[in-house]
Length: 249
Image 1 (tube, rainbow, N blue to C red):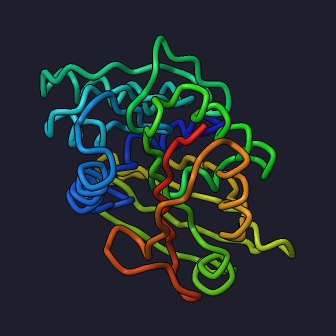
Image 2: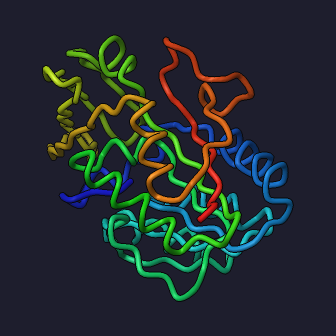
Image 3: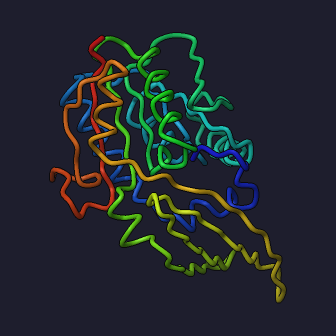
């Protein structure tokens, strides 16, 4: 997850609260890579967060680089790397201004991290940077929360999550442009007491046709757009759209 505020305490509970199906995501990414690129090479994970996907892809044989702006997230990722012993390189960089030492075979960006950029211009800048460092015919695989999800799922709703470590109140505020402001209140358990911390961030809404146009402008061709990490094509009521693009110029 790319962040401007660092996601301080949230980083400690990110994995347990998000409960993402990393096995499904990593297997689908690998399937798309082998179908469209035919080999497992250097993989860049933009907004890698706590490094769980990096670990999965490294286990599959990719040479993985993880990038995030949050030192707190990267600290958790480095702890995982220490425990697993996998050869993963982590860099503290903004995905709008990545600076790689060489070219990249596959770039991925998951869990709606693209939506967390501040504006569409930042999205285009990110795409251009990915293109700059992409190998010829290299892949860019990423997902976004759709405008449909912003309007009808996130909306102005409040969600509550609880586990043995933390109680989380997640509040959404839908704006006129379909962006969503998100406020988290984290109540961390310590014996019989709770300690409160707050985080806030936003998600922009981007029509899928505009994303396709930005990819083309950045030197990619769109190979497919899917309904989440499955085989079905995206539809009007898809909540997550997964893009697969190839570098062509």
